[in-house]
Amino acid sequence: MHEATLTIGQLADRSGVAPSALRYYERLGLIHAARTGGNQRRYARTELRRVAFIRISQQVGVSLEEIRAALDSLPSGRTPTPDDWAALSRAWRDRLDERIRLLGKLRDDLDGCIGCGCLSLQRCTLYNPEDSLAAEGPGPRLMLPRPGQG
Amino acid sequence: MHEATLTIGQLADRSGVAPSALRYYERLGLIHAARTGGNQRRYARTELRRVAFIRISQQVGVSLEEIRAALDSLPSGRTPTPDDWAALSRAWRDRLDERIRLLGKLRDDLDGCIGCGCLSLQRCTLYNPEDSLAAEGPGPRLMLPRPGQG
DNA sequence: CTCCGACTTGAAGCGAACTTCAACTCAAGG
DNA sequence: CCTTGAGTTGAAGTTCGCTTCAAGTCGGAG
Image 1: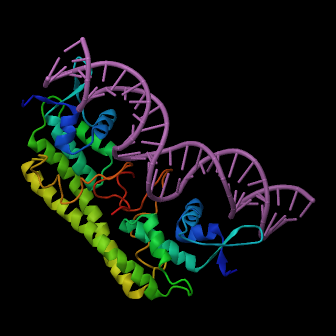
Image 2: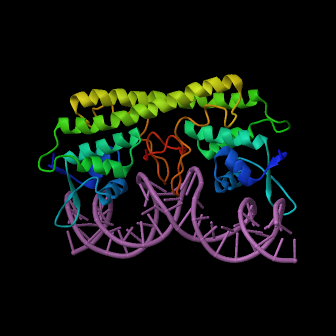
Image 3: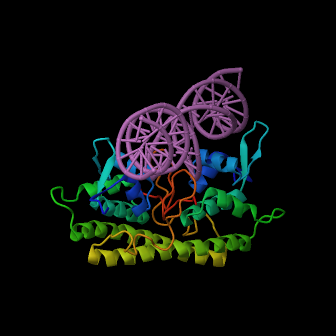
């Protein structure tokens, strides 16, 4: 016991991420696994940290594609140090600040409009909260919480 | 000029929402339109306010299904008053506060972890920010910014 | 009346992030 | 050796919030 590597089930249990999601992450190049003779995945323990970083980044509102790009920027030769991870985390700080700021503004405006009950389209500050309304391309696009795009 | 009703194109222009989206909202029962003899939609001006409410609610992070439920709770007999709209908006306040609070906590934790560079799964407060990790059902589900889905 | 742009419909597609399924192999215990 | 649970694959399905398309109709100007 206390093996050096983890099976996909073990990584799933320890990270709280479903095996199917882990395989999906691997297809996207977010995590990596060695293979046994019988073609089963064996994860290094450092992959736990990668998975943690992925889930935290998702909470910040970053897409898997951007997360992949961030992970690719980790030093390739050596095992990433705490400082390496801290640098990546710092990169999300501004994202998070901006999201919090926009939501805060929305709340303030909503409070103001609860007072007046206006909801008038062009007039109300609520309706054009300084960005949004910039449609680009097909597919679903929400105005604020958009789970990955800018 | 200054007609009593709006065509779908006019409503689209005035609300900033694409005609296809407006038809979609109608299919979901979020907005309603009368029809001309030739089967074209004619929107009452009050629909403008409904559309505004829908877009604002989306920014708060509410799903179209929940928005529909909220709109259904408006008085059916009369045209909604500013107070009616204010009551609905107030209902989203708590949602918004909670989202802001969670993001704020994430930011603070992220700051803490930038200091230590830990990202350790079970130990780090970042990884289990008091809720999340409750999978239910198929389909995509993000942990925080979830644009509407549970 | 003709024309053209705006409108109608249903069905299909898209993008993200996964899950589910079927059919199969591997690994460990008895 | 046999069984059983865990792992493998590729393909297809799911959810949300739309957009796009094709094929046809409406409506107002000239």
